[in-house]
Length: 71
Image (cartoon, rainbow, N blue to C red; front, side):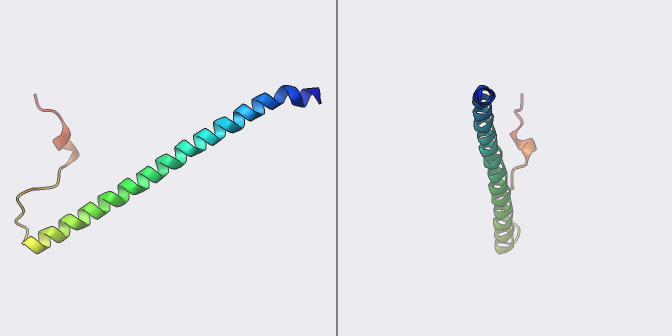
């Protein structure tokens, strides 16, 4: 019984650590799925807009290269 009492705090800390990491990884997975769905929805909206307006839009979708600072 003394051995169990000596190991119990480490087991509890390990379980808490595992629960925290599990929550972080699930949140990250959910965030990536939502971001992907948002990108697909935005691309679909843009294509519908191009078809409706005949491809003569006054703006274009931004690419990641557009976010680079210019000096």
